Amino acid sequence: MNEAVQKFMEGVAAKNPGEKKFLQAVQEVAESVMPVIEATPAYKKAKVLERMVEPERVIMFRVPWVDDKGEIQVNRGFRVQMNSAIGPYKGGIRFNNTVTLDVIKFLGFEQTFKNSLTGIPMGGGKGGSDFDARGKSDGEVMRFCQAFMAELFRHIGPNTDVPAGDLGVGAREIGYMFGMYKKLMNEFTGVLTGKGLAFGGSLIRPEATGYGVTYFADEVLHQNGDSLEGKTCVISGAGNVGLHTIEKINALGGKVVGMRDFEGAVYDPDGITPEKLAWLKELVFKRTMPAGPHGGYLHHYAEKYGAKLMPDKKSWAIPCDVALPTACENELDLNDAKELIKNGVKYVIEGANMPSTNEAIEAFQAAGVIITPGKAANAGGVATSGLEMAQNAMHLCWEAKEVDEKLHGIMRSIHKNCVEHGRDPKTGKINYVKGANIAGFIKVADAMVAQGVV
Ligand code: 2IT
Image 1 (cartoon, rainbow, N blue to C red):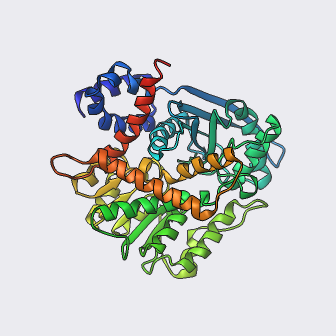
Image 2: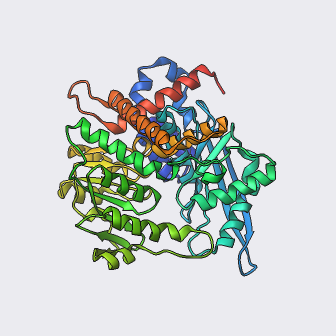
Image 3: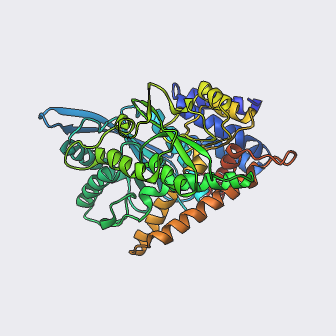
């Protein structure tokens, strides 16, 4: 770590004790942007990075609700409004038992740079709760969402802060939260994205993150004179991002042979074909349908299609050309990186937020493996949320083709931006981590300088 970064990180660590994930996210960005700050007196004088690591506002609240047995449950709610320099706060809501203030702060920090990269005017924010929908009835999920919104509604709005989904928050949860917001405010506005199509949602929003990840992968491979055609790919989380990534990889001629859920990995050397994927989507998405528990888990897939079940294994044990982490932060550590490198991986395209540890990133880069960060590669989700906001503001709906083309164009432009800011002038090699951080940073920093000390 260079001296300026080290000094800066000591200050951030002292102010945010124990917030390991937030510090990890900040360090990765600080290492990339410190040289830019040192070379730009206006950024240095305005203390842009010192301000960026301090959320504009943190809201933490009690969420009491009554379960099916009549017992009172108490969860904790969060909304971190990180940075509004370039637009209203924008970012998802995560419902998962791993959610803490540290997690929401790291996600809000990442979101600020990601949203900047999309080119759409959106600031950074993130929210969530330690509530976990697994094992809860539909009525319980609804009552929890209503209780969560009964506090959150006073802090958000279509021009203030526009939440969306993340882990554990899909169409069902967004619907219940939107209903409560509308009731409390007596106002029908695009205050959330990822809404149902019948009430202001955008076509392609459910598919957008996974499609965007694949469009980005396609650009990266082309930049290297390569293509997805015939490539062996492995994802991790088989959720909304993962399943739509498989769909688009199939469409572009690649083959996905591995994925995982919390029970372990599944290896299907023949590939998850469009037919198998259709069945798998039913299995996974039925789990979050209203009216009771349905659906199943990956072991059902393994049983049905004769794939190899690898209990307690990560998908990184499966040999591949392209690895696409699509689950959650720090799901790919140094040991996983070593195994992937040993097995000949060429590209790591991050579909999740901060899935690789900083040590894993260093190992990939040292081995000449191209790694592209989530804040660039998975930005298609929030970009399409931005397109949903635009449609809501105009009170109209675009056709799927139009949204998809816009998404594709945005992913191309993010890639171009990463290449421009990540290319080493001496070797010509592209460091996508550096490129994404610098490109995302400059826009926010310029806006902060222009707006004075606020
Ligand atoms: O991590 C992300 O970019 C999201 N969860 C989507 C955020 C959004 O506002 O669509």
